[in-house]
Length: 210
Image (cartoon, rainbow, N blue to C red; front, side, top):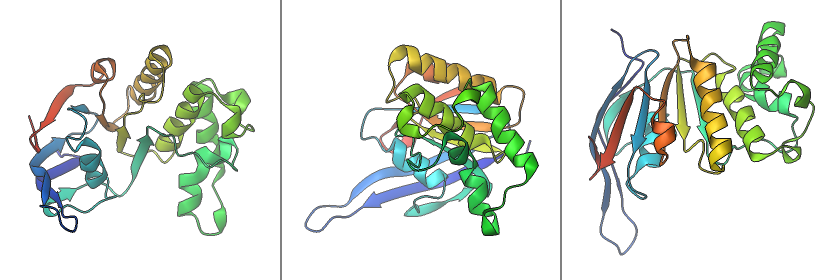
């Protein structure tokens, strides 16, 4: 089966002036297949977010190779919604970034509306992010990540800023949105409940996945 994400011997080190070099990733290997959900767990400071950023192309590895699709959805712990844009405009943002002149097709606009409807935010499309709860903002972030129909979604602690009940709701939404589709998910998390929705759970320990 053809993979959607492949990482081979990924290493990452940091060197600050006057300090010894710190090796965060010491040879990470990972293969993710279409539709597969993978959780990456590990202690704080183990390098989970660094690995996710490298997998998504936001950081470069010191050594090693990563093969990924061009179209990736991102979900961050801090939501990263644009405060001056409405809920609907935030969901459309990845599409606007890819279109010269800021034009989005009617089909894409309908998909954005459908996603917001599926997460229970149909009546909040014209609201600004500051008018939403944390759980609602994370739902908007999920819709934004999926609006371009990416084959791969990377999520960094998607329930980290939420209480347990709201976090459980977000995990249900995430599972419902991706069920029956070929989208793959790689999620960094401290939450056993979040890891439980995945097909595989890997631990980042001593710079390697186990």
